[in-house]
Length: 130
Image 1 (cartoon, rainbow, N blue to C red):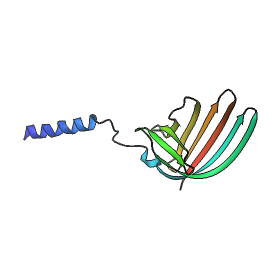
Image 2: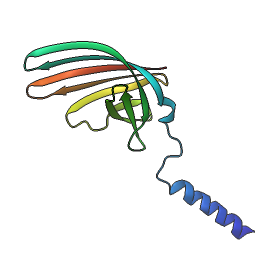
Image 3: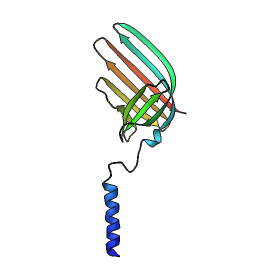
């Protein structure tokens, strides 16, 4: 009986510690349908534009265990790394910088800034769960 109990304990320890997937997926509490308020300002070759709009969309799991995908009803999407404290940043930020966070499980904000030789802009988004 001791050997059987020992084998069960060893199996449980190996199963829990040997798994790459986290035991608790902290992304789950943020997933769902959202309404997004978007404000975009940009300048291309000295011509500036400024626009605001609202759009429905979803937040779903991203391409790895730490990312989320924001998908708008237009089909556009952005992927973010989500940290345990609720802060986010662009998943692939080679050409832009970003800051953002979930203020609660029902509200998030983020800003993306980009600048190239002849154009640049800022996109500020507030998402509220439906």
